[in-house]
Amino acid sequence: MTKEKAWLSHYPNEIPSSIEYEERSLQSYLKEAAETEPDKQALHFMGKNMTYKEVYEKAQRLAYQLQQLEVEKGDRVAIMLANTPQSVICYYGALMAGAVVVQTNPLYVEREIQHQMNDSGAKVMICLDILFPKVEKVRSETFLEHVIVTSIKDYLPFPKNVIYPFIQKKNTGIKVNIIYNENTHPLKELLANKKGEIWEYSIYPKKELALLQYTGGTTGPAKGVMLTHYNLVANTLQCRTWMYKMKKGEETVLAALPFFHVYGMTVVMNLAVMYHSKMIILPKFDPAQVLKTIQKHKVSLFPGAPTMYVGLINEPSIQKYDLSSIEVCLSGSAPLPLEVQERFEKLTNGKLVEGYGLTETSPVAISTPIWGKRKMGSIGVPWPDTEAAILSAETGEIAEAGEIGEIIVKGPQVMKGYWNRPEETAAVFKDDWFLTGDMGYMDEDGYFYIVDRKKDMIIAGGFNIYPREIEEVLYEHTAVQEAAVIGVPDPYRGETVKAFIVLKEGKKVTAEKLEQHCRAYLAAFKVPHLYEFRKELPKTMIGKILKRTLVEEEKKSLKIKKQ
Image (cartoon, rainbow, N blue to C red; front, top):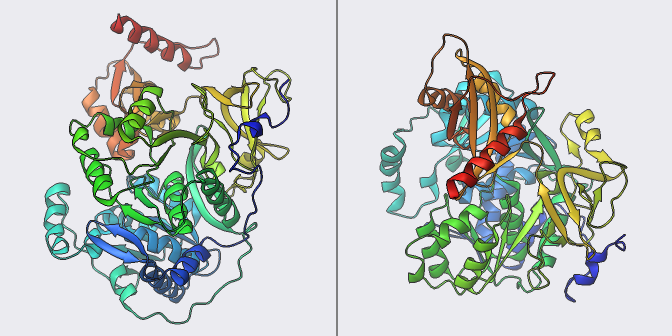
């Protein structure tokens, strides 16, 4: 039996086992940065620079306008934006207004938007102009009272702001034409108005929500994870402590991870604001552009997903760039291949380590020490004030070292629960331990290892994809009798989605037609890349489809192909 918290003996001397958490609101850190370093550059976006004072003032103006639209404390404000200055301004502005932010993936289709708006009860949506048609289609079926619209061009310098609409139309085929009225507002005009007096609410960080972050579920539609101000502040402070060599006010952070994902929100946006760092914001990930950006802006901190690092090390032009400014890269959202880690560190001389967590843990709970002991195949050790253990499937008790079971965690970053789902909340807690659903083990030194992921979940390109949702869409096609979806290995995305289909007798459909059908109801990253038609699927005696058998068949097939 391993001794309790054995991992603490492997902490570098600079990392304490426990840290002091400030009971503050998230938005108070932006205010602090604006007051102490008003002229410090906060954001750089495609040639446009903004200081902390400018970002704070814009956020205050939005807070005032939201309150004028009768947004009150605890109301939900949805944000559906790509990485832009507006996404930072609107995030903190909504919090300043007393609202709870509902981050909404810009890739969502109408059905997904409608579900999230109705489940959260969002009162206001802030979205990009090219996404407005999707919102407008479902608006009348939701609780939305107001939609605020912005454009990427609004925060581009001249002449890019003039050229951009033509580029947008060429790339997307969408010509934006929005009729504004008392319920549809241009963000640019709202922020142009001078700020009136904001009603400042008292915030109780441990009790009150800052965020509803939606996560997919294997047993139904996406559910809102309730994260308090305290949860998010604690995880950001833990992150800052883990990166103890980073210096306040001196770091340049690359914001390539999407802010609408809790990982990008915490380890990029919230961390950068807390650090008074400069964020270099990219609206999308492009390997060549990222390499140019790192060299030009001397990026020191680059949190990302494995697919990003894979893309970079395989970019033919990488040798042309000076990447020596990179000091720390924290990888998350999916397992980090060892060969990717080693190649990237050799190219940059910086450190690339893997973090583990879930939306429910704000998100990071466990990570490999950046400047400390590493173990091959391990996801690392729990962060300060975080406990982790293995729950034995056989005994229901804490397992011994080396025994495989479910990874369980507890700490100040663990969620309050699922929005309006008390039964599902109760199901993932055992006493005060959160049950991750991931299978793994802990060694004698307190280092953790994952041996299997949540049942059936697919992680492709850093996105969590839940097969049941895709299967339900496939079953809606008139030719489909049975469908089973699994993840299969992919050298770039980590995994890709494969669908096994049994057709109804006398019916015919092609893979191309099924793909068209799926694209109408699912975000692009969820649409199967591979289809296999079968006469029958493997099943148990009671008729349950054996997905594990399909997974094993794919593994065998892959082995044969490699031989």
